[in-house]
Amino acid sequence: MRRFYSRKLDKQVVMLGAGEYYVSLKGEIIYTLLGSCVATCLFDRERKIGGMNHFLLPGMVHPDEIFTSEVGRYGMYAMELLIGELIKSGARRERLEAKVFGGGNVLKFRASDGDITGSNVRFATKFLELEGIAPSSQDVGGNKGRKILFFSDSAKVLLKRFDVETVPQALKEESAYKSKIFHPRVDKPAVILF
Image 1: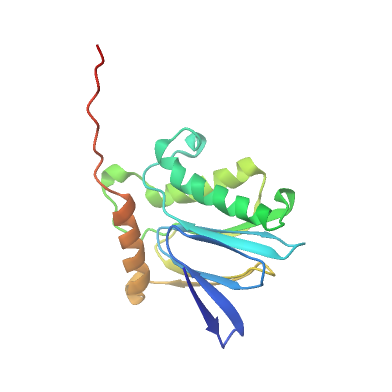
Image 2 (image 1 turned 30 degrees about the vertical axis):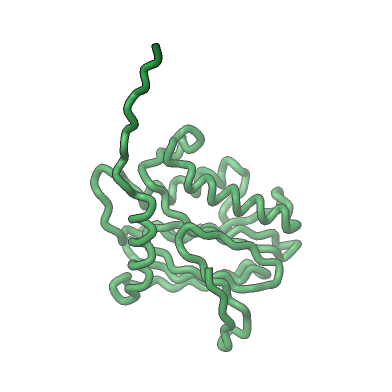
């Protein structure tokens, strides 16, 4: 996570990387670049509290199995952390609204990894449905990256789609994150007790 001041927007900006989340009570702008990852913006309009997460699920997750899938923990964890932090900061769960972005087909995945980008989008949608939080807007899928600027006090979002080849930073960061969470599976030998 990085912070900087934007003269153009006259606001403090918090930049999220893959695997991070942030909640603002100060009206900051939360900014991220997305490729295959998904970012969910949640906000309580009455309290003017907003937050965003940025996650990449490490495997195929069927939306109906998000609570039982071993690999569903990453997205589940990101969503639970964000909701928990919003509530601790004074937001009310029944007032939460959502906006969902990302899930573009921009990273090269192994065929055995399944439909990662589609799984990301389906996971976020299903999770919010189960929580009773209807997304007020979403921009997902396709083959473009996305630059997201989320104004945490008003829930306004500025979105710009881009070819990831033109912004190598986005692809580099997501690729590094992918490498960190996608590692060869090592099966532990069974222990036999006598």
